[in-house]
Image (cartoon, rainbow, N blue to C red; front, top):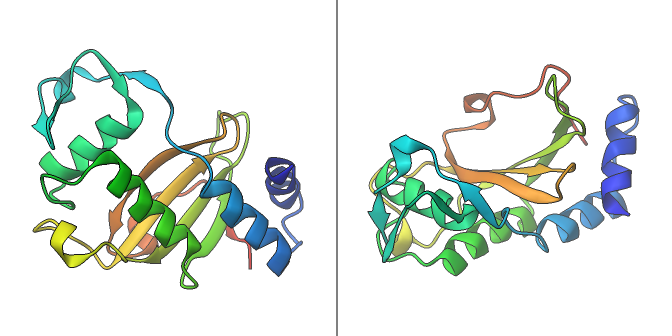
Length: 166
């Protein structure tokens, strides 16, 4: 049901999202995870962190966590997949969260862009942490596409038709 609201909001750019719709989007995004098994790019295979070593196929959650620890240095080694996902969900639930929508060319459905203050506990922050968290949700598959720290909303490339929902 909520995905239909997101699609409708995207299709009607003059319409602002109501508080109830934002809350429904919040609830939806905090109830989903990453795609199950995905093919790991060659460049990421062999990366290790938090007791995981990336092979040919892994859960997308594990892939993202290992990349955020090893390549981005945003979370500390030892962060569990559950903690990483909880950090992303906490940012979505936070009152600082701003929600936007856009549909990149070639996508079959819109994406929801979430920007919020970085609520990751200090002990789990890596040496290259940023002040904001960004989460990207894909309506087409009903999953989180990515989640990581950013310096601000301008640091993320958005769809040409991106707009804030309120």
